Image (cartoon, rainbow, N blue to C red; front, top):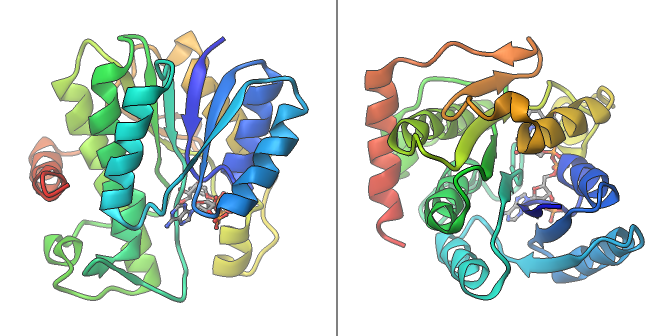
Length: 258
Ligand SMILES: NC(=O)c1ccc[n+]([C@@H]2O[C@H](COP(=O)([O-])OP(=O)(O)OC[C@H]3O[C@@H](n4cnc5c(N)ncnc54)[C@H](OP(=O)(O)O)[C@@H]3O)[C@@H](O)[C@H]2O)c1
């Protein structure tokens, strides 16, 4: 039995993965930004008999992310697995704290939670970052908030940014916890896909299955720093080290503000 923190557990892939993990008997800390919606989810998950606690934070605000990391670090049982699932593609409000909300939620919040919680985690613990097949070279000016991007540019850049940060994190923490970036599979049936792409989407269980395996299976114990592409069903080749170092350094510099 593991203790697993999963962000964005109020719907979609996070909600379905939380259900699968609770049914396996793991203790979950489920995160959401809407307290009432999260309470409903927690009540449903408790029907499995699993121990369920909740964390509320708007991940577009790094101060809230940092406060959540402090609460989790100080007052909970040790986290074995962190699943940075919460993510945003299309949204009415694209700005958050002076930068694109996709960078704030998909990149900075994930990196901040991982950086703050990793020291408290066991060496064989796992950190998963939700990546995507949608990846585009990261514009450091845009990451800084100095240039505006389209929805797809922002989403794809934010996903490559966390994937590159993860590669550097893995290099810097060879003794664990094991940290992976995961594309759960493209166009899975969630709100993000319905609203962003206008299609009902593919079987969500494709994503649930890879996230539960990446979180728990020994198959991934040696894969720290890598990106698992569930469309191709394999670990992708490493990214260019110089680019990963440059992007990760920029993200780390931003994190020091919080
Ligand atoms: N579906 C796919 O085909 C696919 C493919 C590749 C990668 N992904 C990734 O998988 C992850 C889950 O996506 P999904 O498809 O399940 O999307 P979804 O149904 O839209 O769910 C997104 C989750 O993230 C939460 N969230 C969004 N913005 C937040 C914020 N500012 N603060 C806190 N929580 C926030 C949402 O909370 P609310 O319930 O409050 O809105 C929701 O729980 C994302 O990282 C996405 O990029 C999905």
